[in-house]
Amino acid sequence: MTEYSALLVTGGAGFIGSNFIRMALAEKPGLKIVNLDELTYAGNLENLSGCESNPSYVFVKGSICDKDLVLATIRKYNIDGIINFAAESHVDRSISGPEIFVETNVMGTLKLLQCAKECGVKRFLQVSTDEVYGSLGKEGLFTESTTIKPNSPYSASKASADHMVHAFHHTYGMDTVITRCSNNYGPYQFPEKMLPLCINNALNGKTIPVYGDGMQIRDWLYVYDHCTAIMEVFVNGKSGDVYNIGGCNEKTNLELVRTVLRIVGRDESLISFVKDRPGHDRRYAIDASKLMSSSSWKPSVTFEEGIEKTIKWYVDNRAWLDAVCSGSYRAYYEKMYSRR
Ligand code: NAD
Ligand code: TYD
Image (cartoon, rainbow, N blue to C red; front, side, top):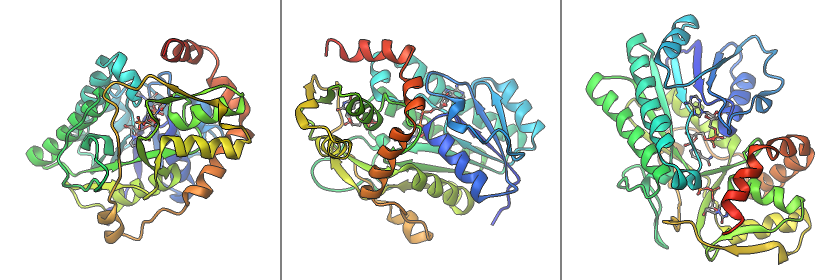
């Protein structure tokens, strides 16, 4: 097993990246974590409050597209591993403005790979998504050999990045691994995504916009379990391989909304069916048996526990939620939902 001394974590001020950094600081003492984040609308240093005082943690503000900065950062901190979380991550935004998704997710990943190669970084992990596989019918699961068939500009940009990572492994012999996870939920998720949006609206007695018939299916995994799986693949995954990550928790969107309303103590009159998302993928479901049979990783949190914990976190952190929902979020919400 290769030992690592300093990890460059990109996009570490976002939802999953910040949860990953908290997990890594707690569970890998002595491992230096350098967080490179541009702090877009989705990046929030509040997600890492308390980490600043940890001597193993460093924050660098900047973009993965800025090669000079990335090279300088890798050299300054003797980075020997990179985990790339940085991305534009919201499907609806990719539908109204795909360009930034290509810039960040494709060009940014390419530049990061070039810098890693130039500096001889030992391993590069690309955090990808199950959405690169496209949409499932009623039966079946995504495996690592399912054909890549992305449907949204977001998933197309993530699939392109995956292909580039594979090309760097195949052509230049770089040590790379790719993880493809299902939908995450948990603390610090920006409320443009379904679950925190639903929790926020339910807490405030506002209607919850459900796209189309609400019978689309997603496979939900508690964010901490995604983070431990990423660490497992980073440390022990086979070079050049792809690993699916998922929790076997398929829920329709309506089931999810009803669960939140029940826990928050609101009635179903808050459900509002609105115009569907164009090109909406019907069903995602992950077969994570490759990772589970090659390691001791398994989800540690059931959906029932995870959803209770998550809602409690948002209730206990109303100040965080109110702060991220002020300012530009209001304009976004108005634009996205007022005439839907
Ligand atoms: P997020 O939108 O919450 O966070 C993205 C972070 O990347 C933000 O902190 C943002 O400031 C940063 N960023 C954006 N552009 C950047 C740039 N050019 N340079 C540096 N930083 C930049 O996203 P998330 O939900 O935490 O997702 C993280 C990763 O996991 C993404 O790659 C996403 O595709 C993948 N993923 C997400 C899910 C999910 O359910 N959220 C599931 C599977 C995979
Ligand atoms: P989302 O959180 O955007 O994740 P993804 O599209 O990447 O799976 O959406 C999860 C599901 O919830 C998806 O089927 C779209 C649906 N959805 C709604 O019905 N209403 C909403 O306001 C949002 C944001 C999503």
